[in-house]
Image (cartoon, rainbow, N blue to C red; front, side, top):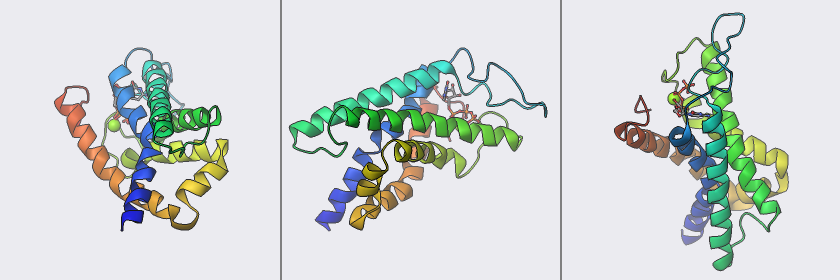
Length: 186
Ligand code: CTP
Ligand code: MG
């Protein structure tokens, strides 16, 4: 039981940069959209006004900074889940940047489905950032992902994150909505 708890907590710890990047993009967002306001031939926006350069840059920087702080805290406690610097830095960057790329891919798909900015889209809303973050970190360092989220009991870390993420996502978005930072509570 205790062993499981430790695995589950490490799963969150190692996913935290990805989880932080999105809400930070909400705080930093605004200004020029990533798609520069352009639409595809179909007439619908490539990504929409909800994906901005400021959000992308601010979210990536904040997630990476948080990751760096986690690396430092971990090193004081003798835990090196992100590995050693400078490689660990690359991992937290990949998690943060990948998270926002996944979020943009989610918006791209939503626009192709003709869903307006902010329209509720189950699964994509909850998982696009996680898929992007894990895909990016797998590209950057497959061995790291394999040893912390797949091999042996580590798959319990992945399973727990996948089950709990929609709940956290919902909670965070209600908070963002109440703070007036998000137009919808999802
Ligand atoms: N945001 C941003 N840049 C990003 C991601 C988010 O500026 N790369 C900001 C936008 O202000 C956005 C808000 O964070 O409206 C909420 O993000 P999200 O829910 O992902 O976007 P939506 O507005 O719901 O748009 P979409 O339908 O495309 O998901
Ligand atoms: Mg949304």
